Image 1 (cartoon, rainbow, N blue to C red):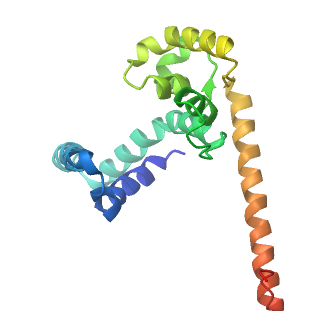
Image 2 (image 1 turned 180 degrees about the vertical axis):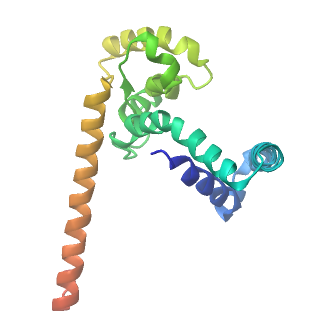
Length: 197
């Protein structure tokens, strides 16, 4: 997870350069803004900071690896909040709050750890109210809990260890599905039977 941000860099550029990013309808302008902002980031971080400020390649590589590894907790936090939850689209019968609370979980931690988590431990609350500043998310969580109690929508909030257990069990389920697909593919290759008639 210490180098996960490199994957996010790559995926961001691949998405913005893909044909799908040009098919945004009335939001066409967002692609250009994102490209401009990413160019600004790489100009400041890559050129001004790394290339112009740091003296040699050893220092540059060490700085990038250390600065990216320090944020590892945030990458684990994003993984906890999303990877352990189902992502199926249940259609128009599912309300916005139901979908957000079904597909994300919050991580329970004491208030003094909020700084380390960067507000990412309130991922379900953030998905419901994306424009609320992170310093207000803990107070908003109380209101979300009350809303969920009144509407009987399940609000998932687990400790760090339990959250990791949920993610690992979900990854195990996916691995078993992949294993089954591989076995089916091998059987079809050996027998020539697809089982589709």
